[in-house]
Length: 162
Image (tube, rainbow, N blue to C red; front, side, top):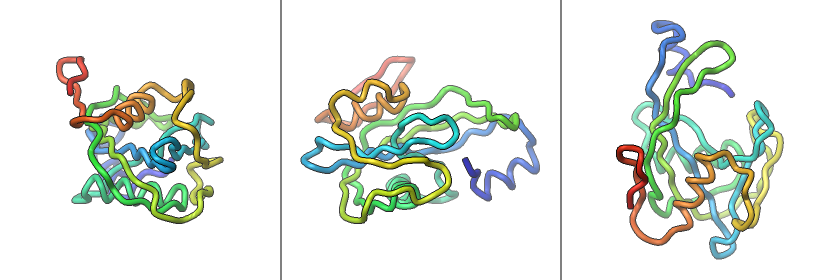
């Protein structure tokens, strides 16, 4: 996965030291919220929600819309915040370490045609929200939050709270 220029610039100063970064997971829905947009990642072959790092000063909703368009060619409009949590620390093959504030947003498809639009993914597609048992845990959590009615979710002291 390509690191944003601002992260590369930071890495010149901090090397492989852990970075605290903000990221978004985009739950793009269509067909009465019965289909979700997924990407199959080039780095590990797993199906996930479109996701990415916020640029400095970028609003999370704008980042989610941008990431979906950049990765899949699908245009979306933000609907609501589904939840906020953090990820476990990640160690990348080059030794870089990071941990992310994970902002989960629900988006509505507004146009475009789903296709691989970058080099980060191998496939793109719409899938029924039922039976997606193979999603990585934080992506499964994000989809679950997005499909719930009610207020945004958050994690406190290890417990998920409404």
